[in-house]
Image (cartoon, rainbow, N blue to C red; front, side, top):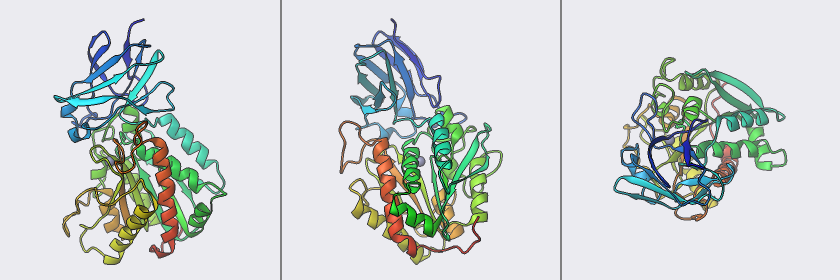
Length: 380
Ligand SMILES: [Zn+2]
């Protein structure tokens, strides 16, 4: 049997440069019409019991080279359990070592979240009692922008994820959030649904997800730079969601991401927006403080630098939504590496931990729900 490499599947991304026995030289492919790349996902077949050395030769030209030192690639032979494997970054190349126990092994930047799994999630959750489904629009490739709604309260809460399609932990987080919010036996969920109306977009970038992109949609647009002036030709995903937000209102919004370089879980706010409202900012800080006390997987000393007053980029979702609706708005970042304060040597940051973090975020939201603003719009 000869060793073969293939990425012609949902979310796959790799290009074979050269193969020398057990040593494979590969390149990550750029997002369409963009220079961004970092997401890889491929399978190696016919390598049972052989010590593979997989070299990603263009790692240093990737979008975030600081993402490679201390990073460990994920591998799975059953496509369910993704564990870390020995990985080095040296001389601009990423070398992944692994000896498969069977004839098929999958390698990825992080545990993938396929579009098939996305459709399963949408169907499973929308079939539950009290859950609504709305198609907010279509992507450039013609996929649906799926939105799930639930809850009878006055506050309008939005959860959106995976604007950057290679940040698959964001949709794992969503799966956790949706499972908790629809658990009838969970009093946190019952309280939240009594006091708020949820609009949830688990995948903001279906085209990039399918195409195996890191950061952009089908035409190379970074959707998290499109919120000030989204257009139907370049960013219909953002336009569809923002138009719906204009109708419904936004009181609280969380935009869920992964960060390539920083080995921590953290939140970023909106302190640089024009005419910052102190009370609005204080609610963001309160949420962050409470989450830091509650979850050992979260911290607040490491993260992005605060913007100077008035210097926020309003093309980012968190800033635009805080500015546009006076919403308590935040970006949640999870690591590709691990959370250094509470590491897991077998799986590093993982789908399960992303899901647990979502549960914890909802617990804090429930604790603060009465303090959140009410936009006063009619229920949509
Ligand atoms: Zn991101």
